[in-house]
Length: 84
Length: 423
Image (cartoon, rainbow over all chains, first blue to last red):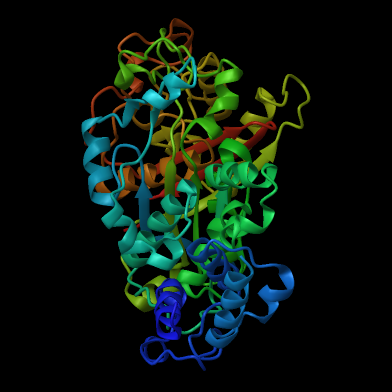
């Protein structure tokens, strides 16, 4: 999966939870889920569950804590996919 | 100086009508909201009929955002949000997620239990060792105060935001709690009401207690028969009722429509003593509740035009009528008109008191008395106390000045409200 494909998938996943349309439109590797997209912190766990479902992976507590940006999500997904 | 308290907004989600206009038409015509439910039959329920409000997916999106509806599975919260938001709008307020926080407005919105379907979903996942897969939506939909938390956020309420619970008197109690808060000057406006989930997981326990009728699965609309000789148990219902209570001063200052005034009321308990039990009322406490409500409202028993009873269509209906006659010291032809909304919508449990109060206020606002259906054969014990003509079988168009609503609940708890026409 290319970097662009991964970003596109993540963009679709976070869409229901975002509260800043402008930041969402300009979503890039550097976008932060809470500070930029204004995703409610309680919804981060839902984003993570949706990422698990999309990529058929399981994300553990340590990784969940880190997963607050597009970049972090990409790293974790790539790492998990490489391990399977 | 205590504040006078008036009603400036109404909302309802009932099995026979999902907004105030539809509900008003339905209760004038005596339309039933009771239908047969195959899922109850498939689950071996004795009673396979019930009252469930009909709400389309489009309608849900008029009230809740796609994000709020993601993983949403709590019918009571849905009903409560619709009724509460409609009441707020009918009081003349905009609903806007960017609105200023209003410290003068709060909500007391009751329920019996919240999100039983959501809780069931969660339990299946938990027992499958998937606690991490619950997501963020389980707590807010299954906490008892889920409904007041949803409404508080949607409306930006900054006064008290809470949920009360007192079984079948929940809705009536919520109104009186909000009334007290405004009367005492602690709030200008309180959105009050209650909601109840529908379906087998909320109704099953009652089916097991054999308090629901099993004789009308073939004729659902005739199943709920308050005061009838052939009453054979209640029919379960669901939904929500909501009222905006406001100080008279604030209502006048805003030039708001006033539906009626809350003159007062009373809440008490029979303490499960002297004949009262977990499930049966202490008759002395019921009578005292009514007497104290009248006294608290500074009216006379003779002034009461119409009673909206608790009257569930169980064997307790006759006792309730006896209690009313003794509390009011009025009987026979001198008894006020009486009806039970449950004949059309069933027993909406925690939502009953608020939906029935909305119906009571509509009677005052529009000057009519809705018919008590399915009572062509009045129970003979009831006729020992009141004349048959006092049981309203066809809608009446008569002047209504003072109307009473009472609710009695498991735990031997009672609530009684006195409403008055405001002109």
